[in-house]
Length: 70
Image 1: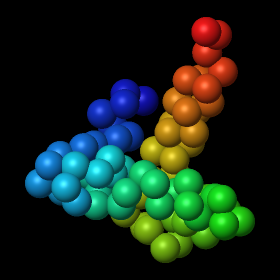
Image 2: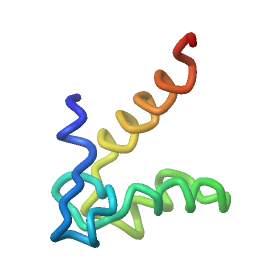
Image 3: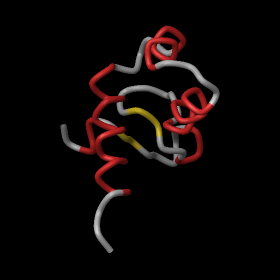
């Protein structure tokens, strides 16, 4: 999945805060929910406009960036 299908940032949407593409749901809210102990399913229940494949792709993208050698 291309990054543009996962993340969108536009100054006209929430002041440029990165959101899930096609939604107004901030990416940060996913991490806040996961840090708080919620599951992906819990998050999707609260934010049905976000797709599961977007979440999985975001987590995979984050993982690959964190584990990239220096």
